[in-house]
Amino acid sequence: MEQKTIYVTKPYLPPLEEFLPYLEQIWNNRVLTNCGPFHQQFEQALCEHLGVQHISLFTNGTIALVTALQSLRITGEVITIPYSFVATSHALLWNGIKPVFVDIDSKTLNMDPAKIEAAITPKTTAILPVHCYGHPCDVEAIQEIADIYNLKVIYDAAHAFGVQCHGGSVLNHGDLSVLSFHATKVFNTFEGGAIVCPDAKTKVRIDQLKNFGHVGEVNVVATGINGKMSEFNAALGLLQLKHIDKALSRRKEIDLAYRKLLKEIKGIHCLGDSGEEIANYAYFPILVGDDYPIGRDELCQALKDRGIHPRRYFYPLISEFPMYRGLPSAHCDNLPLATEAARQVLCLPIYPDLELSVVEEVCRFIAEQ
Ligand SMILES: *Cc1c(COP(=O)(O)O)cnc(C)c1O
Image (tube, rainbow, N blue to C red):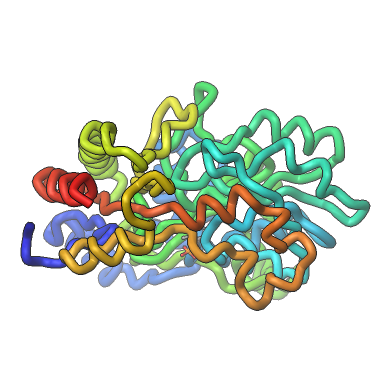
């Protein structure tokens, strides 16, 4: 095994010399933020690349989530899942909204649409599902329920950059979708995020909210926040777009290698492709079953001792954190499948320049336990 430490991901960066002309332009024109030329170009380029109508860029995915909920004036209770990164539920608390947790589907580890109806109360205003690991939710079943009960649907699409299902971008489902361009994500601008929305009117409101609620020089129409992406991040995003296809095809190679090498190992289950027509190979989650010789945590530690650092995404469940665990819906009896997944999951290293020899070494190590 290689001596150097291998982490679950390594941020993808373009060659530095390719970024210098962008920096020169910023230094020359002195427009650093406030929706300058790179911000506008990047919004346009993303719409084309992703196949969506409107995009509003943000400083990060969390502020984008908080703003998305505000833009649709969501209040009361929102149905969401505990099996995600904590920012999903935090965005609700930042808006004074009560999260109501429902369980996940054991195959996709996404929100189980069959669990939604029982969680609806007169206070429910929206559903906040997550395309976990970039695998699309059952968008049609979720929309059907939302239509019956007149609920908004906001997707936490932080993992779902470039994913397609039902013949188009997964980001075109629901009322809004929120992306993250954090360093650890498939597509990064160091920090960054975006809201995808289907109509120009909603984009105007989102653009106001991310700029303090300002309209023109002297009017303030909402209690907005400062969520604008800077010119530095937008310029980097424009350049990153030129490299994303290459990066995704490398990820695909690694994904295929893992699947092939882990297939025969008893007790190790690779999460399947869950219906996406174009995947982004953002993560490589495995489930360590009870028929594997050692437990998930033991395997995780053994790999770490060998210099390989997998991550237990998502353990613990959001519903176990102190600000959530008192909620009636946070009880583990309500969330048996999420609890089970959190106990078994391990995300293995995957990133564009991960060498296949490391993938082989990891799989051999897992097979030998
Ligand atoms: C990364 C992530 C976020 C937060 O995005 P940031 O850009 O880091 O603020 C939200 N939800 C999920 C599921 C994430 O993985």
